[in-house]
Amino acid sequence: MSGLVKDNIFGSSGSVIAAAGGLSWQPVVTASTVTVSAGKGYFINTTSNACTITLPSSAIAGDQIILTDYARTWGTNAITIDSNGLNFQSETDDYIVDYDTSGQAVNLVYSGATVGWTPASDIVSAFDHTPPPTQKAIFGFGSPNGGGTILSITNLVTSSGIIGSDVTGVGTARWNLAATGYGDDKAIFAYGNIGSYTLTNISNLVSNSGVVATDTTGVGTSRLALAAARYGVGLAIFAYGYDGGNVSMSNLVTSSGVIGSDVTGVGTARHYPGAASYGTDKAIFGYGKVTGKVNMTNLVTNVGVIGTDVSGVGTARDELAAASYGEDKAIFGYGSTGSLSSLTNLVSNTGVVASDTTGVGTARQSLAAASYGGDKAIFAYGTTADSNLVSNTGVVATDVTAVGTLRQYLGAAGYSTTA
Image (tube, rainbow, N blue to C red; front, side, top):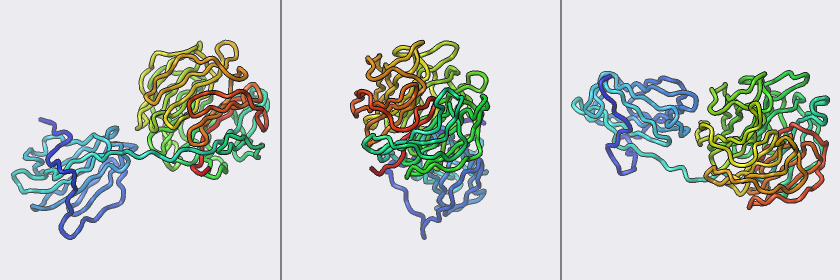
């Protein structure tokens, strides 16, 4: 390999020219290799892996191939082009040609033997729309007495923050699990403890009408005391936890609710953190327990990559909860500092954690939180039968007696875009 041709910029008009007679678009490619043909367009999905694309071994001037970043993941898993014996921008196929910018579309045209394949355009499409805000929420599962009894009941939360009565649960009863929204308007519960410290990795999807589905066979390491949040567009991530020891692994969730296999974690292994989305397409994990309580955080990019530890702000604690509010910000609240706490910490839309805010409401731990009403949040349950609404400016309201069975170590998530 004698050189590198990277992110080739040949034309800058921003337009993709049509091939004579039209271009035939092919099914989405998810494989790690694909051989392409002239006169066709290809959506290359590198969500799960990089992809090597082999061009035709023979071509005539005017042959055209278009490659498009289907899931905006080329920045994480790049495509590599094998020009298969023909030149690429005057260079032989001894050169490596890759494209590694999310949102790219490459329009390749064959110009003849001397120059060979060349990008008639190489553009990056902006992604500037925002998913519709979550309107409702769901609390589910947990234990009323720290594991002696385990529940699978759920409680739906209206778009005005009112918690509904118990709904008979579907799926295996468990506690110390996590939950998050995904796919813009749905939610998922996963992992946890099904009793006698028997850990599980089963999951349950929640429809956009708040109906919990039966168990889905688990993916990834069974564990408890983890956290989860949305990121990207319609995507989610579960991370950290305890499987007999602290872990820092993560599992990504697709926009259709499929949990991926373990990804080696970044950041200090710990359990009992909180997590929430921020900045419309990113996430943050914070606080938790290593051997003692910590206040470090880890930011998650819009492609699901967890960053290294960020020095903590605020009082170290664990068994807290977190949720997004104000459409692009987040809040961590409550938990145990060694004693029960009602402290909160706001997170800006750039992922900066603020210092402690004097708590409102009854101090408690092992609660859950979720966004609702488009731009607000709710904390509920834990060691007391209370809930606290959070305004779209991050102000926590006084206690409201929660409806439904008092319980701890439950999960909560936003769902539905319909008020």
